[in-house]
Amino acid sequence: MEHSKEQGRGDTMTLLARTRTPRHGEAVSSAEPRVRWVLAALMLGMLLAALDSTIVSTAMPRIVAELGGLTYYSWVFSAYMLTSTVCVPIFGKFSDLYGRRRMYQLGLALFVTGSALCGFASTMMELILFRALQGVGAAALMPVALTIIGDLFPPDQRGKVQGLFGSVFGIASIAGPAIGGILTDHFSWPWVFWVNLPLGVAAMVVIAYGLPETKGCRNQPVDYLGAVLLMGGLSALLLALVMGGTEWPWGSVQIVSLFVASAVLLALFGYVETKAADPLLPLSLLGNRVIGVSLALGFLVGAAMFGAISYIPLFVQGVIGVSASLAGYVLTPLMLATIVSSIVSGRLVTKVTYRGFAVFSSVVIAAGFLLLSTMGVETPLWVAMMYMILVGLGMGPLNPVLTIAVQNATDATQRGLATSSLQLFRSVGGTVGVTVMGVFLNHQLEAQLQRLASHVPPGMADQVGHVTSPQALLSPEVRAALPVDLLKLLQDALAHALDRVFLLSALITAFVFAVGLLYGRAKAVGQAALRRR
Picture 1 (cartoon, rainbow, N blue to C red):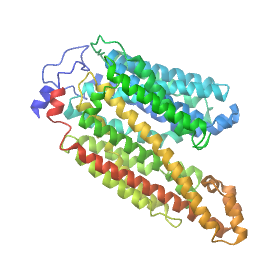
Picture 2: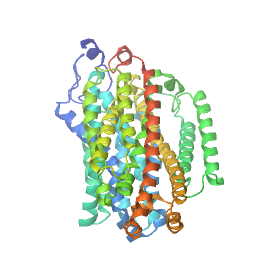
Picture 3: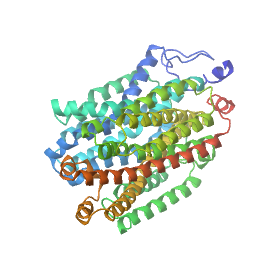
Picture 4: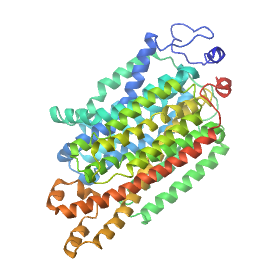
């Protein structure tokens, strides 16, 4: 262990570089005052980006009432998601080339500027445009922050800090709706965006004075062509996934064209990367076993997590019948379990192999999803929460462990790119998961409604035919207008359809188990990590 610490202090970036140079073998301690301030600023920036989705969703009904443009409702979220996903690898690569602090401050500046403009938006189209600008800034906040942690701390200390940072998204999911409601009700909806300004500026000031800069010494030209092709290919893919089945049918010319454009652009990107002097995403990086396995797991975990979690509130509101306000907080037990297990796993990461974490997490998550798939109309809410806690306990360790794995498998010159690539795969996996499960749910629900219509009296069958969307069961007016027997049948139909979604999530988790076995016996602090330090 002492040998690993001595090898781990040679990184070019140490937090105290401005005041003194640490002696060989000296740890950068989180107890240092400047370290604590920088970590707080990094965590604050990540929290702002994570809060922005949940806090805005609460205010959207008021925003639509004032600005109009209900038909563009979903694009307030899609624009943010699109730019925050597409720009992630760009910021990661540029942080390797031009310095972490510079890229992180640029991201914060764009995020704060977008937040200010969102509050002044007078039309829905303006709000969508400014949300896209917010997303560009948010693309830097998480991956660059996690990369900075990898720069500041040696392999044997990263786990504790990464686990703590991994809890930020759970906190945002819990606090976001409440904060959004308070700001909207007691002030006005622009404050949902303006609250980011003082916090973002404070984080920028602390980073400016507390974080030393590091700059890659590279003379190769920047791979701008690769950046354009990657952004274009990802944009086309995400647009097809977001708009397919909603704006246009899946088989429409528009959606098929987007998928084809995405495939062509990403294929060209792969070709360009083999020729570039300094590629944006070196294919050799993907050839690294630990990194390749981690990226695959990030994609699968994103698909299972975001896909299934999107439909748990639908179950408790549409099937169990809780109120809309309570449904907004029903994921709180899952998020709390995620926070706890993320922190605990960060402390254990040097003692357990990556494979051990992947196997344990996949088994626990799969068990949780299988239990969720057994729920029905008579399932008490507390039982559903117990199942969700099990899922959260399995999900918590994966995010920090995957981040540590990719950082330990690279040196400082590619750490930003590796970290951002993991975030990119996780985000794209989440988008794919939500889309696939949405299509699967609609197909299952249609089959359940057809089966239901063939087994009820003709009069009730006509009523069933009008309820073709699960959203109908979320309306108190619709539920109150339906006969009790028919409501029970419809709840059963929705429950069976959602049970299949949870089974699909369990199947995806089985792939997490299989891919996790490919890690071998690699640990957070091993010879590979030491060589790259």
